[in-house]
Length: 142
Length: 142
DNA sequence: TCATATATTTAGAATAAGTCTAAGTTGAGA
DNA sequence: TCTCAACTTAGACTTATTCTAAATATATGA
Image 1 (tube, each protein chain N blue to C red):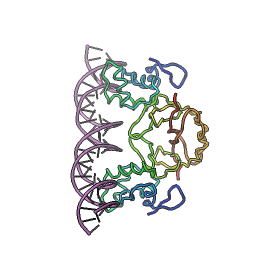
Image 2 (tube, rainbow over the protein chains, first blue to last red):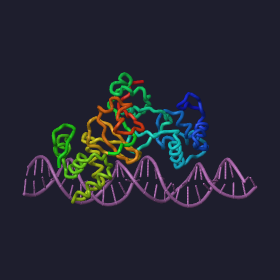
Image 3 (tube, helix red, strand yellow):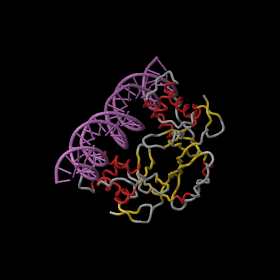
Image 4 (cartoon, rainbow over the protein chains, first blue to last red):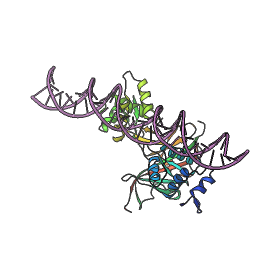
């Protein structure tokens, strides 16, 4: 299966892993592939069950966690924290934001340019209850 | 002990709880009080040890969790999600953002108005590696 | 005040997400 | 083909949090 990465070129999960220096084992390929073709921001457990049922070979929970960490360290995927106690994963590693529907829990990507005029905006597509900007970086001394 | 809430009036933790319809038991008062006078965005465990050591009476872990959930539901405090696997708490319930120092883990509040021109900004006080806008709200149908 | 109902707190058991460990499997290169 | 390092695995372990059931405290009404 193929998927779009941040560039416009269509790449296979295998090619993507190779390009990031990750050995494309069958388990890693199938997990990366699943993340590339979904927009559902799944948890590790959701990855495990989705991939397991579409797969003949068994896949262990430990491998799912190992692989997600490997892919994250290699820059192939990103963590998304939206709710307490669970980590979600996103194969869209471009700079973007997230909109969480508080009723359904659905998470959709918001392109970075949409957020330039952060206050208003999204007005006709989304009912924004609130938003949280989370900065990562370094404090200067004192 | 007294603390500033979002208004300028100085209120005791007890007065704050009463105003939010939460019965001010000693345990709740001491926990709310601790949160009001710190800016460290502590986890439940950090609340437990900080409050326990400053307290003659024992305080159980379950009470800390119960109280944090009660205070959150009453709007006295907010959850802050910055890292996987841990929930932090903030008695500043005004609309504001957070800056996480990736070296030290220190979390500081960023006033909402600072974020109006989100891209540049913070330039001379902080080295911003990146930021994440997290929206909460509701999707319109389709 | 006393009795009773209700809310709160507690210790510890239970759960859930994630990590670790040690053994087994795989595959690339000599 | 053999070997070694990398990878995967099951299940034990850890950590954060919730649940349970009993004990305690508080409020209410006679």
